[in-house]
Amino acid sequence: MSSARIAALTCLSLGCFAANSLLCRAALRGGLLDPATFTSVRLASGAAFLAILAVARRTRPAGGDLGSALALFLYAAAFSMAYDRIGAGVGALLLFASVQATMVGWAAVRGTRPRRAQVAGIALALSGLGWLTVPGASAPDPAGAALMVAAGAAWGAYSLRGREARDPVAATAHNFLLAVPMALALGAASAPAGPATAPGIALAAASGALASGVGYSLWYASVPALGATRAAAVQLAVPVLAGAGATAFLGERLTPRIAAAGGAILAGIALTLRRPRPREPSPRPP
Image 1 (tube, rainbow, N blue to C red):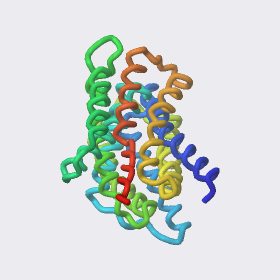
Image 2 (cartoon, rainbow, N blue to C red):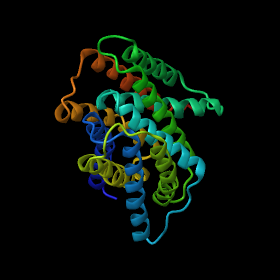
Image 3 (cartoon, rainbow, N blue to C red):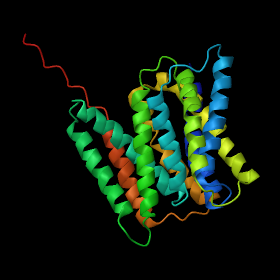
Image 4 (cartoon, rainbow, N blue to C red):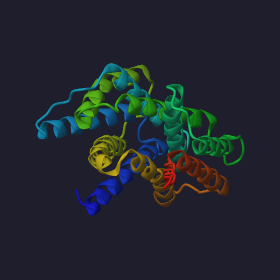
């Protein structure tokens, strides 16, 4: 695969990931849809798109499991409920920080000793996260922030469970299909705040089929060429894109506190992803 094609696929997939936050916030902020219905439509449309894609690739949705589907559902549900309360830019920062903290923390629990740069990066990111959520005029809603942190933890768990999938697209399609009944049960148990509108359903379907289905497919196509470290590093662009989009399209205000805390979070995550420099070989004795 050429470098230009890898760059194009990567940019498109990152744009899709950022669009998920914008589409969800646009639907919920305007009262066009309630969080439970958004979650159901998003997962159902994503499952339909990915299943069609799997069949087109001469395979079928397979390789998922109930544990991964539950993690996917918890992520999608908490994501929607969080964006009913907080802005897209802040939400993307909280989500990304939580995902990385979950994955790095799991590696540490499994016995992978973090490097000093990783420890410093985690401390910096957590300090930025703490500053962002300390009560104040520009702090996000506490319940919304907690829900987005939970969404990030669930997505981190989903990512960890899916690392060994032989066919990521087929496995993702299977997990989406398994998660749809969970989302429908949530919708049946929830009392919608208002009627589901056609624009709201369209935004949720775009989030599922385009931002999720297309985004994940493009991402899985580019990750093998990027490598794990670069793939993790380029995801730093997602909160930046989401924040810029929220300012441009949703009218959200970028406060100095959000900008500074976001910078600390992204810098800290960048430190955790930094590769150690290889040691130069000791000179051999003559």
